[in-house]
Image 1 (cartoon, each protein chain N blue to C red):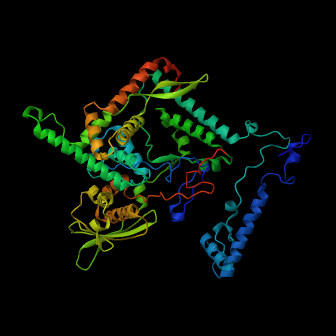
Image 2 (cartoon, each protein chain N blue to C red):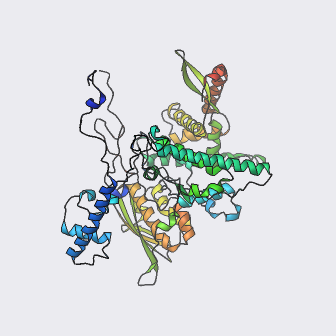
Length: 233
Length: 350
């Protein structure tokens, strides 16, 4: 097991170290809480808060809080989901490139939607969604599977058992499928933003290869329903 | 390692003469205290000060003067402290002359811990009985919620000191769970005295940091300075009032110094959070680190500088948004036998 050491900055910034080192660890003491960046949550007057929120506020006043990461900011343009997607698209730590690809994708979506908007007749203009952030979130939501499969070995044979997924896992799978789809199934000359915007618009309308993959997974889970009792958690 | 079969474990111990930690008798400790007090008076005489008003700090200074030491570890240098601080508290002998132990739980090995658990559970049953009585008489159960935010339970080390016994993590967590169960009952106010022995007050975080007052320069404009660090980058920021929102880093404008949008967003984060984007001017100097580390360092420095311009409530909001904590994450070191901090060498079967 690897033991960490506070190199460079010396004793002042020494991490809190437990006696037994786990493999997944963080430089923060476990009593540190996550920061809350959104401005609106701090502007609510005291009376509107529920009991739980009041308790949480008191707890927060006493406990130390972690520093906000560089990807998070209180401006309207920073979105945690978009930053997560950008990080997954990033290769070899090239955040600049990933971020520019993401902004080009959002621009491409906006352009396509605006073209459609201007060409559509009057009565359909309201149904066309032009906000690229809304399209992104809705597309991701449409791609998220409800149930997943997990390999369980019983009696020498490995079965694919249907298993409920956590929120984080669903989001991760949706993003992963989108990115792999865009990297592999495209013509050699198409750029990533173009392909991604195409995929996102298709997913927004519940069409396209990613949605198909999600349905295939659901069908497999339905087919393996008989093994559902193998799950013990 | 081979083990001899026909010998006892006592002989197999490497250092045959060693018998547990030293036990200090009461007479020994008393003698040490007398010697310490005498020595304190002699020391005061030597230093030419009054023996009656010679405090521990004076003793420390005198010893550091008379016995200068170049050792780095403070614990290794010569020191003169009261015997209760030097010799750890130990329990007196737990059995009488006939060899029969005093406490009924002596043979469990952790007598004070188990007796504590028994006591706490007794209180728990007491509270439940009281609750049942109230329910039988149809009286309302008291529901004033105990303020959990301002207090914390004793840590494992503090509990060990209190019981004079070693505890395991499991024992400690069981005890805390029992205390929490006790506190969760509605009629736990009866045993408030007992519970207070195991809880400590936690001061509100904000009071630990001192906010500096504003300074004024020659033109009468208010300004304040702040320093920030992030991963080998250090920055100092000077935030001026009545400004236009211009930010200068190391003599150049931020648009030229930070071509990436993410860094500029980080610089503007504290101002945007407080809603003061066009109102302040900033001049900063930064050195060390990389692009993102410098941005983080300036962000921390500007947040610290803005504390003097803003009300206490907003400072608390800034702290809860994570703007005022130093980011402790640094590059993890490379380990021997591996290629990087986590990556292992390529595994070859043969």
